[in-house]
Structure formats: structure tokens, C-alpha cells
Length: 67
Image 1 (tube, helix red, strand yellow):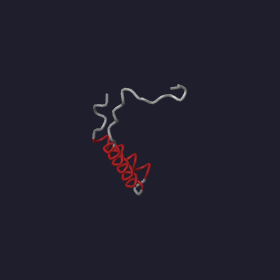
Image 2 (cartoon, rainbow, N blue to C red):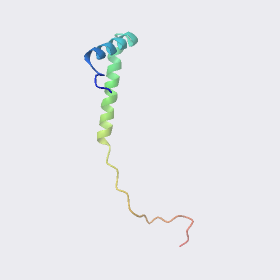
Image 3 (tube, helix red, strand yellow):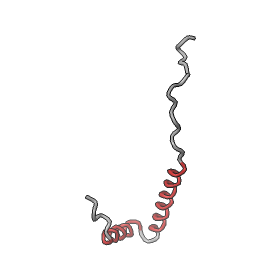
Image 4 (cartoon, one colour):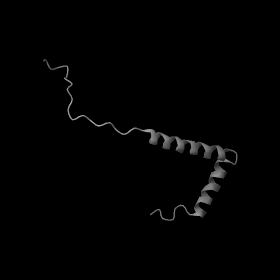
């Protein structure tokens, strides 16, 4: 389905359209912002601790039970 999606000619057309929409001054800022966002996402995913193991049973009594 997406076999030939990112061919060099397609990427060139996308770049030209982005250049026309955002302009030559805004395009580097846009690229920098996207790069920083991706980098922050990767760092956040790498620093995430694994899920703690869940206890099989808990000894917490509900307030409505009398003991």
C-alpha cells in the first residue's frame, strides 16, 4: 500500500510545498521544532520505568466492613 510513498521526487515535491506555505525564513525554525519534539519524545520513552508488578492480593479492608 505504501511501497513507493517516500521516493525522492515525492520528498522534493513535499519540500517545495512546505517552502511555499511557510517561507524560507520559517522553514528552518519549523524543522528545528520538529526535531526537538522527536528528540524529547525518544528521551521520555527511554526514561520511562517499566510497570511495577501488581500484587496478587491486597490486605486493604473497605471502610464499610466491621472487624
